[in-house]
Image 1 (tube, one colour):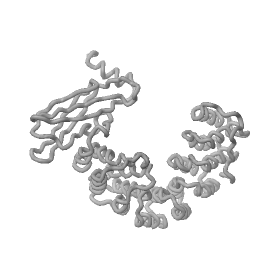
Image 2 (cartoon, rainbow, N blue to C red):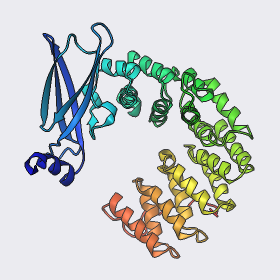
Image 3 (spheres, rainbow, N blue to C red):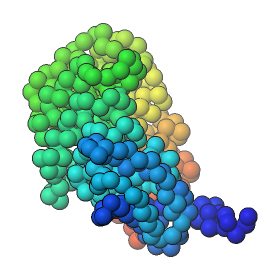
Image 4 (tube, helix red, strand yellow):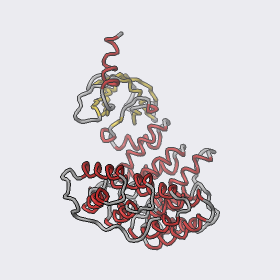
Length: 412
């Protein structure tokens, strides 16, 4: 009936966003009390969502139980009382990820995440538990974030033992995206082992390959000499598995030093001889090298012109993940040089200009102004540059102010 579904309709069909839940529990006198608070993911909203939250309450030790429950969440705070013989070890607060809601990881104690990361049967909740343990690596180390020894030990054990290759892959990729310059050396032997031959996984060729690729990308983020040498050994191979070329070059790029750049440039030449797919895959890794020293190598690849727009697409896609280089004055000059190259098509210039969407440096502002004022630049490209200027630099600079020089050399 209309009155019975009104709350659901108003929340899910006429409002934006989704609920964030803050769960908690207490146990006393043979009774478990479950409490769930909800809030919308948009802080300014007041939406109260209506949904069912499937739960499983776990205890491995006697009196052991694994109790499946469901909680209707249709108010800012709801509670459920359940008779149980002892307190649980951990609770899966969204079994199978079936509720369209995000669980606030900070609301749960570390001990519950540790138990779930190792023991939970539901891969969706087990993945969330491992990501919660890895969360400190998602913040700048200057903030003082670092996992506890217990959390780090549990995370390493889960990466070594988790029965799902896709859970392992997701955690490895999250770690590879960490803003930390180098992850703790504790990861070295484990990640190297996963990059060489994942152990303890089912017969799943695709899943095992994905774990290897994710581990290779992470390997360059860890201080581990054997891992470094393994990456270089792969780069020097002319028969490297096609599925691992990009991962090996991305891992080597993360090392970010002169030796790795030399090996990367040689690998691009080597893979280029194997055909377009191998060349593009290696080039995607080269373009993720964080230092300005890579720019001459990228320029030579763009000037070759063998693959034309496809090479530009690969380089631009990789540069979107290379914030350090794109934000640098040299990176902006490289982008401007491409945009002002009259021999380049307007379609690829639009892709390249998108690299400046999130760059708010004086050099970026000057480059955008230069594009709007340059002769021979298409009106559509100028309009795109003006739009970025309006968004990133609301106080419009005077025409011609703060000019930046494009990088020398053709990009064709």
